Each structure stands twice: as structure tokens, then as C-alpha cells.
Amino acid sequence: MSEILVTGGTGTLGVPTVNALRNGGHSVRVLSRQSGPEQVTGDLLTGAGLGDALSGVDTVVHLATSANAKDVDAAERLLDEAEHSGVTHIIYMSIVGIESIPLPYYRAKLDVERLLEASPVPHTILRATQFHDLLTMIFAYQKRLPWVFVPRFGAQPIAVDDVAVRLAELAASEPAGRVADIGGPEKLSAEQMARQWKAAAHSTKRIVSIRLPGAIVRALRERKNMVPGPRYGTQTYADYLARRYG
Image (cartoon, rainbow, N blue to C red; front, side, top):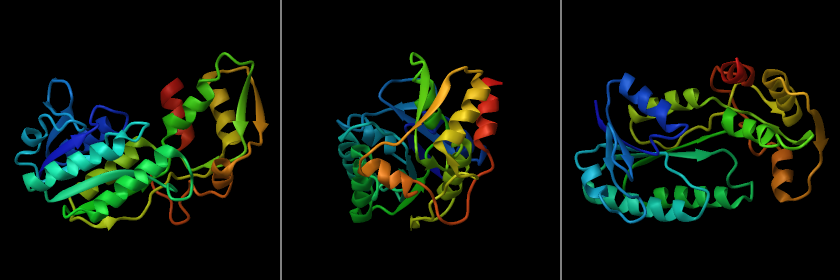
């Protein structure tokens, strides 16, 4: 089995991905700016420690991300170091619809995809729909309001465990460029999700559906955040809520 470096390996998707890779028999290093058990120290922005972290690594699973343009700088640094270190496969986690939904974070994701496509390091790009926990935060963060405001658009949420399984499959395969996007097993309106959350969280708040203007919401109403093909994964939003609040 290959030697794999995972960036963002301590995050929401990183933890189940590291577990899935190790369960598959891979030797896994987790890149972190701070030392810790089963971690290697390195900084994606400065490059400090990256060379040592990548030494002997065949495959990189790049999950580290942030809500700013530093994602592009980090990817540039990682690609440069990976090329010098002889890495033969970089797997990048991206998001469905980033070319159609004009969020700055999505634009940065698209820029990273283009960097990968221009790099001599062989790569695989996987796009997935939004995770269950991120969408749930939209409802939970309104705890100080007397209502839960819900925009009029839908989602196809996917479990991080299901995405981790797919990433582990890709890590055991040859570089494939951009592979088929994956989305969760059900497509729900935001209001349907909010009502499921309200019941699971035992909330007494009134749910208020609102129509928002703008290009971002228009793209979401047009289902640009969903996968038109076969659905992937097994865990529904109700399954996620039952584990979180049960």
C-alpha cells in the first residue's frame, strides 16, 4: 500500500478520511502546523517542514481549506513541493457547482482546480455536495432569534463518512483527473431540512421561509449545488440528525 499524506486531516472530513485510509491498509501521515500524535509538522503557506513531510510520500489527499484566498497560495506551495518530492498522485476535495455559484470561497476552489490541471503532478479532483453538518449550522446559529429563517432553495446533503469512503477508493486508484461528482442520497428543500432539524433538536421555533435576491441564491434555486446524475452515499439527513441529537 502507498504512503499517504493528508492535509486537513484533523478536520470534519479529515478524521473519517484518515480512518478510511488506515482501514484500507495505507500508511498515513497527517500534516499539521503543530506537532501531535501521528502527525507531521508542516506549513502550507510558508512551506516550512513540507519537504520533510512529503519525503517518501506517493499520494497526497488535499483536504485543508480556509474561507479566504490563502487556499490558492497553499495549493501552489503544496504542488511545488510535491513535484520536487516525486509525489505521483494528488487528490483534491472540491465542491459541486463552484463554476456556477459566485461565492468567493468557491472561486478559490475553482482556481485550485485549475492549478492542479496545469501542474505536472498527476491529480484527481472529486467534487461533492455540501455536508450535513454545514447545512445544520445555518439553523442552529439562529438560536438567539425567535424564528428560524430558511431561504427558498434546496440541497443534496452528503455524509462526511460517505465522502471519506470515496476518497479512500480514489487513493487506491490511478490519477483520473476530474472524476464524477457525488451528492447525497436525497434532494431536499431547505424548509424540509429545517423541519427535520426542528423535530430532532426539539426546537419550538417557528420556521419562516424567505425569498432572497441575488446571483448566489438564483444559482441555488436552479440546483447548481446538486448532482444531476446517480445519487451517492447511504446516510440521509434524518440519519445524521438522529446521531447528532439522539
